[in-house]
Amino acid sequence: MASVARTFSSASSKASFTFTPLRRNLTTASRARPTTSIATPIRQTGRRGYASGGSTSGGSSKIVIPLGLGLVGAAGYYAYSNNLLSSVFAGARASGLKTGGAFTPTRDDFQRVYNDVAEILENNDYDNGSYGPVVVRLGWHASGTYDKETKTGGSNGATMRFAPESEHGANAGLKTARDLLEGIKKKHPWISYSDLWTLAAVAAIQEMGGPKIPWRPGRKDGDVSACTPDGRLPDASKDQKHLRAIFYRMGFNDQEIVALSGAHALGRCHTDRSGFDGPWTFSPTMLTNDYYKLLLEEKWAWKKWNGPKQFEDVSTKSLMMLPTDMALIKDKEFKKHVERYAKDNDLFFRDFADVFGRLLELGVPFEKEEKFIFKSTTD
Image 1 (cartoon, helix red, strand yellow):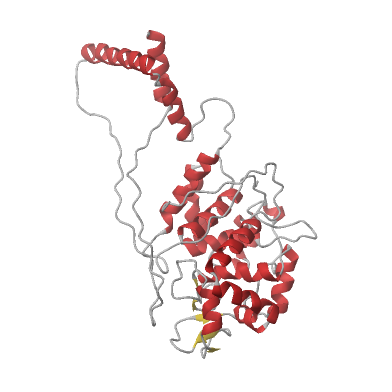
Image 2 (cartoon, helix red, strand yellow):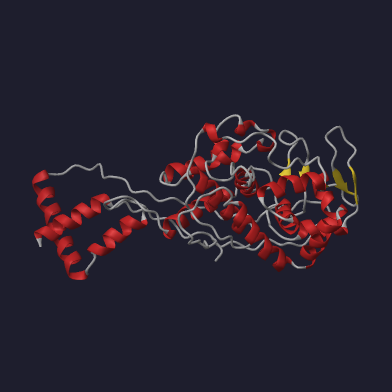
């Protein structure tokens, strides 16, 4: 029994348990279109954190030490008689601790990363109340540099950590997302930046009402020598010819170009980043097929302002579309897919989940085929 007590005491000292309150229930945001105002996500309720502190009271060591040994002995016997030692080690594993040998993350470890990302997405002081759109953009831009001919670029490497790639015009503003995820990286140092950024994009999509995105780990971080040249990401001021050149280089077809463009249902443009200004939809923190509906149903006109050329909706003048967005309805091959997705949100979700998942895998020499489907916080 003394041996069991020592084992239990050692295991207990290695395992660190953190108790957190149950995550709040989220109310599904209304998707009814307002006349002029921009919808913001329903805020989460306040949370309390719990921490334990050591006692500062004094006492006789002659009394405390025997009492402590007695408690350890009793605990050891209880563990022995109730088979709790395995639970201790299971708890240590669930906390992401090494219990011996090399640490090999499991699906549960990645789910914990997902949960931690989901926890920090909502913020009343940022844009429309969520970091979700900029996190999606980080994962998108980290992956969309792939060139199928040279086999360079893509999500493997996380080279946007370095200049000059971090300073490319298309990546303006993404330091916000990279800095946001640093806290997650420190908490889970075993995960590569490449896996973290893409997993975070999956979490953001799902937490903003989007479909489940199959994801798998295996990306490795690179160095500055792997940075891609500027110009590999879409230029929003261009037309359909440019879109095809950019996306065909990655290996996508017309239908997939239109499906990926549906991510513009999220977020907004900023004058201090791209130079453009405004959101695409009335609910910029919820992924729906509204982007396609608005392209087809609204009347769009050139915005009269001193900024770059962009379109605004005639009825409210509160929404915008970029030249590359309008190219989707000017080109007959693109337009037929816009019409399909405008009519069927489930079809859009199915196609988007497939192509977005593949986008996040561009340029990655995976060693395993298994993919994970993560639970959303509303599941």
